[in-house]
Length: 314
Image 1 (cartoon, rainbow, N blue to C red):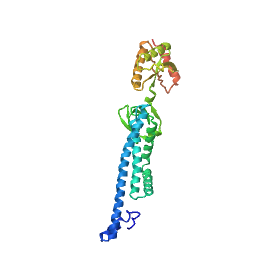
Image 2 (cartoon, rainbow, N blue to C red):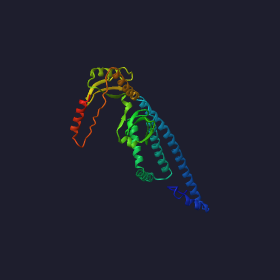
Image 3 (cartoon, rainbow, N blue to C red):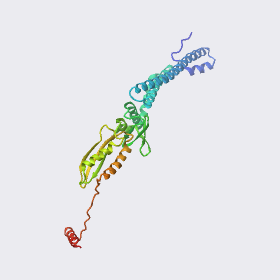
Image 4 (cartoon, rainbow, N blue to C red):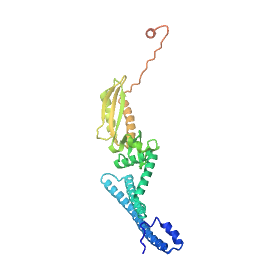
């Protein structure tokens, strides 16, 4: 009995040609080759099917396990779970495909070399995109913000609507939807307004030098304490903060929840002005002195003459 070829795939087409000529030896070799190759195809198909099943199964298990761990600390993050699930699936599928190709007679080292060269070429062509992907991975792992958080990214404030490996979608206060590349977001300062659970309000009121400052302080403190949206801790703070040219600056500082911050700030500004005026306190207006220069006399002499004329007028 003839020995089975070491690699039945390479001389396959030569055997087909000789077998077609009616050579009985080649016919037996072709049958043996087809039998061996059929076994390899069957094993490769089983490996591929098992790989796809394992990838889906392990991907769901990884996502479920991550969500279970997250729920112990904070609400589950679907974006991070989906990313981990997809990563597990891709890794398992890649390993399975290499095993399938090796079963079919393709050397794994050659496949890895080709994939490495292709990855290098793709990486050079997509540097900006890959930097966004890398930043997206870091954002998903570190979680400086989550969907629904009020944040400031790249100098723009808004609510995070969604995030993936490439972009963060932000709805700003003008109703505009912003798509911010993760690379720029991760490389700049990230301000999470929601995370702290409170936000400070600071308002300055300028009253006249002749007004009662203690009354102004007490009035503004009462305005802050009477608003239910103002947090009791930290307590509202009211102090004289500056002596200006024509007025005294009285500053009110208090805290509110991030969701109430904007409305509370504007309402306190209106209520503070109205209550100060109701107490008889005034808000000085800036004054300007206009002087005319006459070419015949110096400005100081002209001003003295005008003052003298006004004093002598009946």
